[in-house]
Image 1 (cartoon, rainbow, N blue to C red):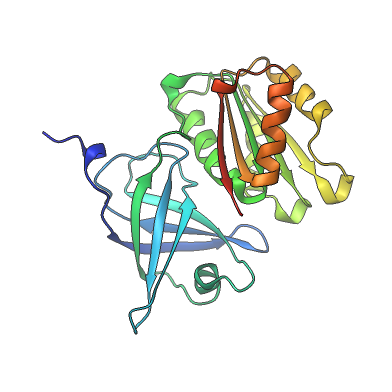
Image 2: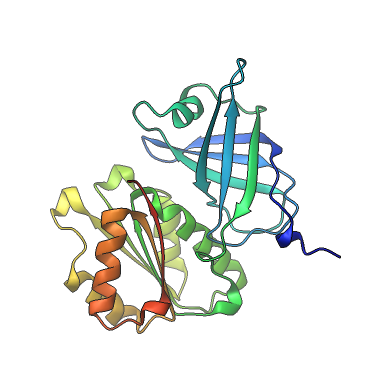
Length: 240
């Protein structure tokens, strides 16, 4: 029997089943889709739109939902100026639409319960989305694994899943949240902040960093300077 993970990925029709606002610029979109392989926390999908004249636009989006096997995936899409795909979802997409998805994709930036911890997660802006999938999966499958999320955004209105993260920090004994608002505090993540995270968590078994290139590069360098073994650092970047 062929391992499903070894089969070529194919485009599949997914039904948009729910839309809800997350921040002023980000919305959650939940799709019902029959992928032929199980998802892992941290993976992404390709999404393709086809216009009546045959023109196609394709983008990749991280999966926010935990891999719970219920046949749905949640994507969080930020509306960008002049974004042809994000603009469609922000202004046109409706529950019941059929959208082409391909996935789940990715093997390097994933976390499984057997991978253990402690987990240091660092997200910049919408880079928190795959980390949210990891946190949701961990809470159900391995709540004993210590985890700390260092999350940097410009201001409080841009915090994705703000209420959920606050509730997890309050109710989950082994989860800590460090929220950094750069516009409010005028401070970007620096060595002192990383040292505080490491003091609170302890030496991480895995560190997952996701965000724009400058954010990921800075945090990775700070972790290396703090003595974290580079093999423990997993990165996912977006932007030029």
